[in-house]
Amino acid sequence: MAASQEPLLIKRYASRRLYNTESSDYVTLDDIAGFIRTGRDVKIVDLKSGDDLTRQYLLQIIAEHESRGESVLPVNLLTDLVRGYTSEAQSVVPQFLSMSFDMLRDGQSKVMERLSTSPLSQMPGFEAMQAQQEAFVKAMTGGLGGVWSGGDEDEGKAPAAPEKPAPGTDDLSDIKTQLAELQAKLSKLT
Image (cartoon, rainbow, N blue to C red):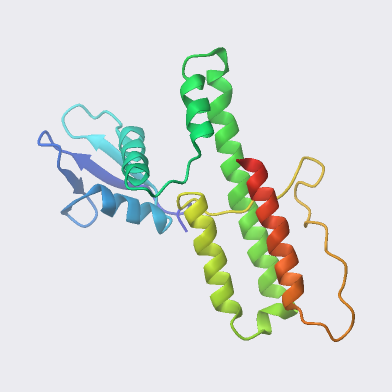
């Protein structure tokens, strides 16, 4: 969805007001966060100088969420980011973070695709469970969406399937087992 669209251009005026060039109205940081959550990329530029301010405003959005108690980033990760700015590893940190979030997004897509083509998709309430899973992952990744797909040797492969339950047992136990595996993989990231 976002890949096929140009980024939404937001211009910052000298008064620091943000102007959405697509809808011809002023927007807030919460509005911009909403655009991003729906999958839209944004580009924020200073009207006068033409400087790209996107990174600055995205960091401000994250800082505001964190200050309101909507913590997504663990303190140890924030500490490592600060250290990354003052060490030789600075060039590695952005690449690592980018690759990690790419893996999260890709893994989430694969999991949801597998679930939607499985017999479980016919189970009553499957759509609600799928929506909850997507909301959980978006909350954990700040709207980036995704579940980690596994280690190096497993990259691109489905997670190891749990043992098949005895005939007549509920498929819900399979879902619980798979969800537990996914949660364990997510916890390894932090």
